[in-house]
Length: 454
Ligand code: GLN
Image 1 (tube, protein in one colour):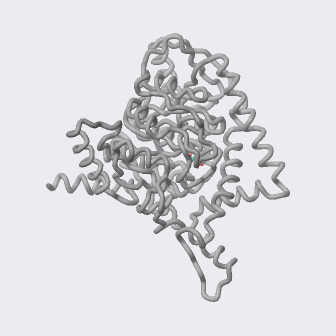
Image 2 (tube, protein in one colour):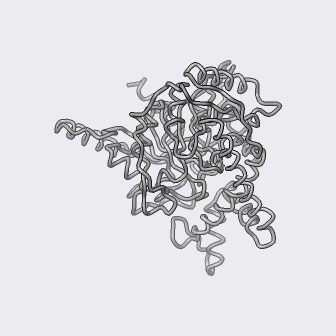
Image 3 (tube, rainbow, N blue to C red):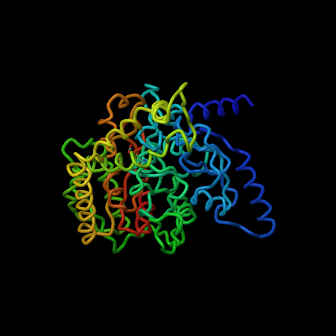
């Protein structure tokens, strides 16, 4: 019992969960037992799943890791979570994240940062970032607190935390998973996806999570392929593109070595490898950090103290004072920074210079991928420019934090499926991830390449 209690304390110290709902997971396990006795097995019968606390869950507090939504208990269930429960899974709890999914380290959460279960070899014992924004999901899976979790990815929030913690996660093609019931960050980029230890688990989960939903205007009205049944690590006849712009001068040599290893593995699996060019890559980060905040500033306008969660009503205050007081107290510094950037780039005087320009560059970035995919079937790149960093290291410098997204945002801007799989460890024994980017709707090739690397 002592050992067990110590393990529980260690698990809780990761701060991965905002709310725990073990009774729901047990209910699903009981239902699975009964169904099994009756000879009925569902795709996820009895599987306990952690839900990123960005998915609205009926009757269970949904905060987006913000003070603004503290105490908000939705009366409805997100489409993606409803599909998981229909498939027999049970909710273990709501997982911590960066506030409103804005961040790359989980340090912007109102409920405190999440800690990665990994430590650097060599005994410095520093607490490491689990990545973000799906840091609760990555930490919980890596620590074996749950076999699978949901994530959302606007600019890398499934892939980068997966890379930092040695697990896998896939962001499907934009529109595959319904956004209905997911707290909105940047609607033209937001996509849900699974995170799990293996590629096969990801395929199985994604099959359940994906599918047309009339309640999401950008949902793709297409059948969901049987990705799990279609898995094969044989890449004969496939051509892998290596985008040369992802190998800038000064790329961390350990990341370069990981990438070369990944190329060798895909060749061993039968693939042909060619160099390709994505010339507008260098504009992806500034483009993303204009478009995402612009959409966020609009999406977050709904938190006015009237309709959701937090309300601050100073004595004798009028409506404007209530808005101001509520938003001042309800949003953290990173969210306010995004709202300010967003309203600035959308303002009458600067709209053309920033927002319109960013939309044009976004189209060029998407076209780069279209042209590259005339020469190849998938792309292989590193997921992140470094292994997990020490908590606090980048907190004072938002730009350094944004730079961490350099390899993940281009696929988001183009709406393409992209996955991170573990590729090895650095000289400190920390996990490193490889990113596979596929053609629109070709999750199968992405998963197959992931299987070949895994
Ligand atoms: N790190 C990126 C950001 O802060 C991506 C976040 C995400 O994908 N939700 O915007």
